[in-house]
Every structure is written in structure tokens, then in C-alpha cells.
Image 1 (tube, rainbow, N blue to C red):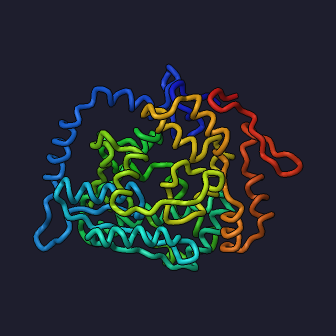
Image 2: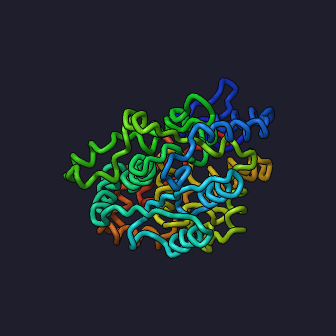
Image 3: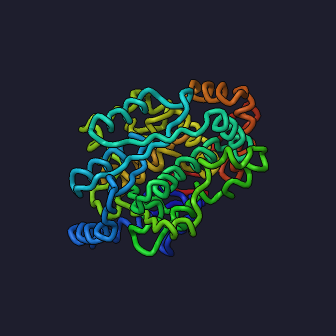
Length: 376
């Protein structure tokens, strides 16, 4: 385990590869942005949009997947108010036991801002069963739900015959998931290869006993279907020089976004602006930390370090303090939803701990073997 020389990203991120100089992909990309001509990128975007004229009889110019959070709110406003397009916003809705009131209010805010929002809501009991199966098999309850989340947008694009999909950040350049890189910095059609989506598709769900007809919301369209519908995903973040977690939150908050009020100790969310539509993602961020040695706070700190708003030493300090943060209340409500005990939850977590990076003590405590910012 080694750390980036500039930020606090370890080389344990899936599909990531450091440079020979020990720099993570995201920091390497940021260095390249010093020479970026943002006016030229804006002109490239406008030329690109001309390749997707609205067809006769159609009302929408493009599709944007939204949760109502900071990134999707900023994208929707930029696309409508700056680019002059009429986007259809597509939201995959969590079932009532999972969605937060905050999430409901933020989607309502987008509607009140004048956008057309299409809600996709998979069958709740299939959702619950898949969530339990995901946790049992992968100790990652979101393996199935993230498939549905990413799938809903291209499925709707095909159904509504809207070929242009505008996405947020490029996970290859801005996070380091290199398998998602396309022909250009804004080509998003290789999004299907990101770590979230490349875990075997529906096969494990079928083996778990779920009928294929119940899994349609979880089936990401094949490359051939993309080509037949002439779909193109475009990473909008590539064109925006001020695209960042904090900046997007500032834009969105100025336009009605409701953020978290819970503490960093409970959420690992330094500013209370991520994953606003539900709370159990906090569990997954904690578990990700125990699997790979980094969690939500690492991602926060990395961006702040790259933007010069936090020193690397400050980043190390907050990561050491909060990267495994998760409220007992969130764990208990999750266990109630999938019908397991809290002890069973921790049995799963302990079995999934990366023992190269951590030790599991007899009392259940999980202790770090590595030093944040240094590694092993």
C-alpha cells in the first residue's frame, strides 16, 4: 500500500494506477488542467451539442440522471440556464423505508425550479431482497441498487429516443477509475466498465433465485443497444473548470438544496453535502474503508488538497479521525430493513476486512496497520 505524493489517495482504489513518480491519476489530471483552455472546451461542448439536434416532435434535448443532490442540481441549472437546453431529469427513487425526507425535498426542489423529472421506482420487495443478497454476497448492499441507478438513465434514453446523456464527473480522470476512460476526456460510453458496474451483471442475482423478469431495472444496456440507439454519454464536468464537490454544493445550496445536519462523527461527511437522498451509504463508505483503506473522508480530503484549501497534513489528520465514521443508528435501521441482527452485520463486516491493511481484535475492534499518508 502506497500513497500519492500530493494527496492522501492510496493505490488500493480499484482500477487505479499511479504514475512512475508516485502520483495518483486524479492529481496527475489536475496538473494537466494548468494548461487547459476553458473557453476552447466550452466551444467544443457547443460544437458537440450541435451533433444532437432535437428531433421533430420531441420536447427534450438531453437526459440528466439526478438524485436531487449537489452535482445533479448544478448540472440541471447549467444545462438549462447556460446552454439553453431543455433536459429531462431522470431520478431512480429509493423505496420509502430507505429514502430520506431530505432526498424527497431536494427532488421536489428541482421540480419547483421548473424541471421535468421522471421518477423510476423498481419493485420495493425485489429491491429489498436484492439489497439483502448484495450484502450477504459482497458485504456491499449497494451492488444491486447502483446497477439500477446507473441503468435507469440509458434505459429511459432508449425508451424516449433521446440519444444525448449528460453525466457529471469523469470517474477515470477525476477519481482514478481508469477503465472508464473513453476516446476523449468527455466520452462517457465506457462508464459501463467502472468498478460499480463491472461486477458480473445479473448473473449473481439469477443464481440467488431472482427471476429475470424482475431484474429489468437492473440490466444495463449492452454496447450494441447503445450503438443502435446512437446513445452518447458526455461527462459535463470535463468542460467546467470550477467543477468540485464544494463548488457544486455552493451552486446547489444557493438554489434550494437541503443538506445534512448530522455530525461528521456520525457520517464521515465533512460538509454534509453528499449522498443526501438516503443514509445507509454511510455504512458502505465505512465498509469500503475496511476493504481498501480509504473512505468518504479520503475523497473529501483529496479534493480539498488538490484545490489548495487543505494541506496534506490536515488531510491526513481528518482521514485518521473520521474515515471509518458511521452512526450506530444508521447500522440499526439498515439491519432492521434487511432483517438481520447488528451482530450478524458485524460478522459480515469482520469477514470482509482486508487483513493486509487491518487487524480484527477479539473484542471486535478493527485496527489500522498502515499509517495514513505513508502506507505499509
